[in-house]
Each structure stands twice: as structure tokens, then as C-alpha cells.
Amino acid sequence: MRILGTGFRVAAAALALSAGLTVTAAADDFIAQCKIGTPVPEAEKICKCMSDKIAGADRADVIGAMTTTNAVMAKGGTPASPEMTPKVMKGLETAMTVQAQCM
Image 1 (cartoon, rainbow, N blue to C red):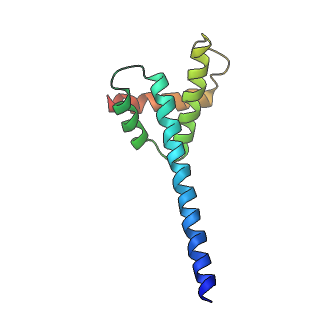
Image 2: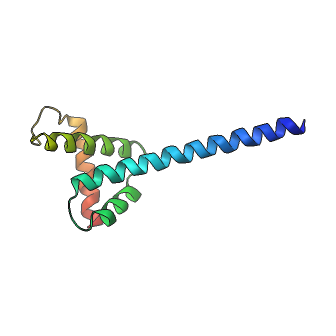
Image 3: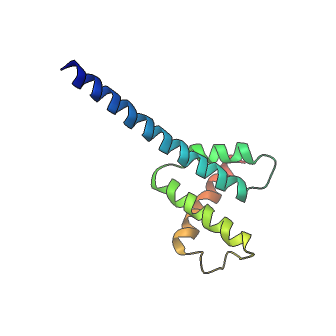
């Protein structure tokens, strides 16, 4: 019986660790994409502030919007490019609103 309890604790610890790594990866994705789109000396501070303020479904939408926007701009595109769907534009609007609060 004791072995079963130990196995459960090990499995629970592994699950908690993997969840923590997923959250950390999402934070890293957010910060990385934010820094690409915020080429100013204070980018680290601004992006950290934004990361702290954006959560849940909005966070995934904002990361997607930043990724798409950065890719479009890197190719010489504009905000009117076809890749800039309404969902991307909404995520970008959320990012810009929060960015203004963090500046």
C-alpha cells in the first residue's frame, strides 16, 4: 500500500512540474514575441508588465497576434496584409491597449 501512495505522489509531482513548464513556456513565448514587436530600450520592462496583465484566452490570442504581426512585418507586409484577420486584429488591439498601460 505504501508503494502505491509513493507512486501517486511521484505522478502528482510530475504533473505539477509539467504544468509549470507549460506556463513558463507560454510566458517565454509571450516575452519573445513582445520584444520583437517592441524595439525600444525598455522592452524587457514593458513586455514583463504586459505578460503579467494578459491571461487566459486573451493571452493565447495576443501571442498569436504578435506572432502573426511580427512575421508579416518581417516580410515587409503591412497591417492591411491578408494574414491580419479580425481575430489577429482583436489580439493586436488587446496588446496595444495593455502596452499603453505599461509604458
